[in-house]
Amino acid sequence: MHPIELQSITKRFKAAEKGEEEITILQDLSLNVIQGQSTAIIGRSGSGKSTLLHIAGGLDSPSEGKVFCSGIDFATLDDRKRSELRNLHIGFIFQANLLLEDFTALENVMAPALISGKKAKDCRERAVSLLRRLGLEDRMNHVPGKLSGGEKQRVAICRALMNEPEVILADEPTGALDEENATDVENLLLDLVKEEGRSLLLVTHNQEFAFKCDNVYLLKNRTLNLEKSLS
Image (cartoon, rainbow, N blue to C red; front, side, top):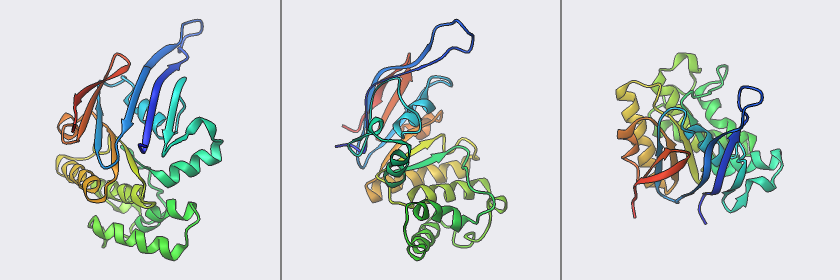
């Protein structure tokens, strides 16, 4: 069983103009996210990379096909159960870090665990440990407005790891960073996969970052083409 399994996924959208046919952005696409490996998806803007990632994480639903998270079909769950499954098994990192501006770095990192019902004391201990590991021990009590771009993204990574997810889904996680901070974040994510046996599914325009991953797919003409494989 894989952390995330996509089976024969097709995604269609209604055309912007009334009377036009639906637009197919993904067609009969399958992908297994392998435990302990990093997988990157590259492709042109508008090719459907972010749509695919949102479907993989249960944030969007396919028009056809099935998506399994830890063996559970997202389509069989109501909204509450789907959110619970995501919160327990998936950590999300987005280009826009989506931190809560009125909360400190520590509070932002603690939030997913508190939502899942864990004790505040336990949440705090893990959040502090994660922030220290990522070199943010002196920034824990700062709100996002007092953090640099690289620091914000590291906080977002801590938040994604808070519930010890099996898989991390990352959508252009270095797209808004300068070269130095981007490299730091890239290496951090790949190291976490190796050190903790987690899985990473990354979508990016950055081919250099992508080809550091174990597996690389090109999303083109609505389907995936394997460019690099660990096996």
